[in-house]
Image (cartoon, rainbow, N blue to C red):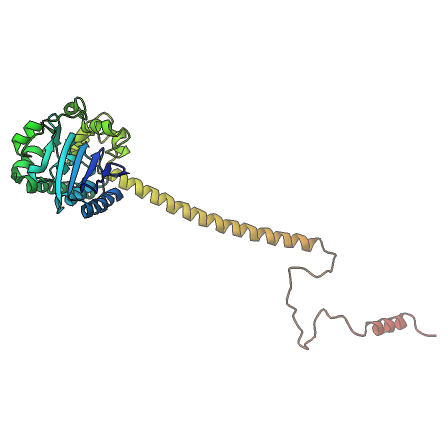
Length: 346
């Protein structure tokens, strides 16, 4: 039975207790972190160990995620079962390290197979501190790869790092790799999986031979320098990066430009908030003015003598406590007296 999960396939034979793992394609789902499939690979490999005495790992891959690759390497390297690895065409970059996960005498390269080693690659974007952190991670990853290779082959770490991890792609035939000390023997069988002119390809193009949609670098790098050889990106010296990708001061903003832009945007936001507050206050004042004017107009439309709808003047009382505007209670009697004076009784 077989189980297909992205870049690897598992073939089990419980009768013979021999299983095969085929790593054919780009390793991992993400170039920048360990993916779910790396953890799944380790789980599947552990299950194989329960029912099989020998596990053959056959590889034809341009490499891929170092983080996925290291998890796979450790699972293979630390197995208590008999492990054999096979180069079925091409083992490049991380795949070359996986090939060497078996004991040296159990590595089986095909006669016409190719091995390619180089320093790990990454992409970085951000301020100086973030770039420096990316460089530190690269140094640690490279050290881990060199140590892994030397632990299995017995080669000298300093020699391996200086020779094969010097930011250049190093292509080796099966015989050259054997002579260099990476493995003990070369198989007489030839395979048909070797990409033509692989050694002349840029690494990004080589990856696309296996997976056309694979993208090693983020889109922003491809937009900035679509025609550049991205293998140069490993050297992250700021000045060299500008030279490689033509990042001139005139074309791209400096850090001060960015900080000034942020400062300007912040000031514009504060000004907008102040303008909004003033507009809301002005609107509230205008609405109150309109309400007052409407009340005055309503008062003017009332009949003479009608009580005002808005003006309630306090009344002043005289010293006797009576209202000055209170009409005389005996007005009728006073009028009658006046008439008697004007018209005396006969």
